[in-house]
Image (cartoon, rainbow, N blue to C red):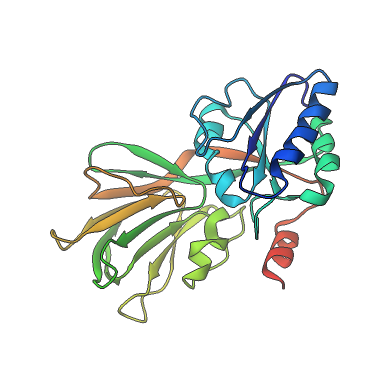
Length: 270
C-alpha cells in the first residue's frame, strides 16, 4: 500500500551521513505532499509514531530496537537504512536509500510480520522484545543458578553466566554469539540459550511459541540483571520472571525479492 499521508524518520546522528540522508529523504516525502515527523531521541518516545503509515530508521540495529515499543504500540511498519555495522534489521543500503525510500512510498515492498517475545516481572510489568530477553549475573565472577519451568513442569537448573531467550529475528544476535541456532523467521518457536554453561551438555532448547516459561533464581542472594533488546537493565522486583511469545507482532518492510537467506549470506559472509 502506498504511503500518502504521514511518514516518520528516526535518525541516529552519531552515524556518519545519517542526518544528511534524513534531510534528503524528508525532501522526497514533502515533495509528494506527505507529512514528515523526525526524531533523534533514543529510545523513541512511546507516542512518537502515532498516526504514521510507516517509519524509516537511519542507523544500525540498535536504533531500530529503540523504535520497537512505539511501532508495536501504534501498529506502524518500520524499515531500516543501514548506517551501522552489520545491520541485520536494516535491509535498505545507504547507497541506494533514496531509491528504496521511493519504492516504499510507492507501495513496492514486502511486509513481514515478525514475532516478539515478552517478559512479565514479579511485580506485574510487561516488556516486549524484538531480539531477545537476557538474564545475567551482575557479578561477572559468580555463576547464576536459574531454575526453569515450562507448562509441563520442571526443565532444569542452569548454572552459568545466564540465559538468552531469543526470537527467530534475534537468533542472529547474542544468541548466535553464545552458540545458539539460527532460526528462520517463519518458524513459530523461540530459543533459550545458556551463556557459558557450567555443564557443557546444557545447550539451546527450542520452545514452541505457545510455551510459557517461568525463570526463578535459586540463590536468593544472587545479583541478577534482566535486559530487553539490549536496553538498560530492568529495575524492581523481577523474579520469578515469565517469558512467552507476545500476542502482538511487528511489521517490517523489506525490498521485494529479498529472502532471509539473502540477508544471512550478505551479513554473515557465507
